[in-house]
Length: 254
Image 1 (cartoon, rainbow, N blue to C red):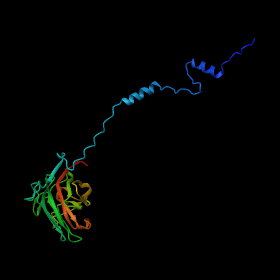
Image 2: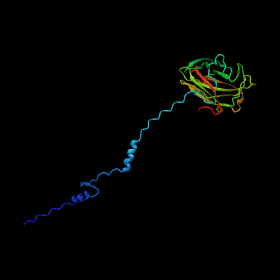
Image 3: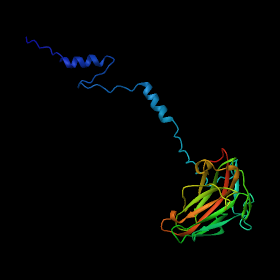
Image 4: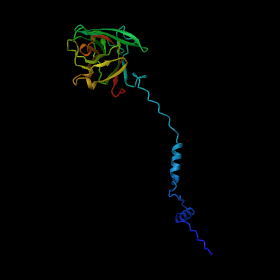
């Protein structure tokens, strides 16, 4: 009688069977399944996805060229609204134009952006020509009176070109000297300021421009000077100015 040989399962097949019945399933090809994500990771991803998207923050509003209302401590000196004729500043001082070495500044007022502005048309024919404005802090024509400005530490004003070109302007603060032939003592001045196509507010701090010997109890006048040497190739043009304002100590926005 022929005895039929028993068939034995191959070892890999047995291993696959045994492992399949356990807690870990392994493919018979030798590859393992990808591990499941941890519950904490799944919860964190869901929370992140559920967060509301914040809307973009609006851009900050640009600072106005001239504050309205005026900050506390700003004292208007001349706004050129009702001070042109007669020429008396809001503080009561006389004001006008001056010229040197053939320079001439012609003053008028113009409407610009809803306000009356000082319009300064200048002509400077020679290399050393100058012209500008003077505004007494107090006093009549030719008779300035001293004004104590020691309670102020600066002046603000607006400046702009009145034509298609940029121009350079210096702002001046002058002391009254009653013993001088021109009744003029120390004069502090800024570096050349640009009058361009847009209105720009300038704030001049006295400590930066006044001589240490300037007697602030005897302020005489303020004004602008347009110097031929500051203008480059142009010897004529138009400059607009407005809102000359004294700033009490600690005031100002810059």
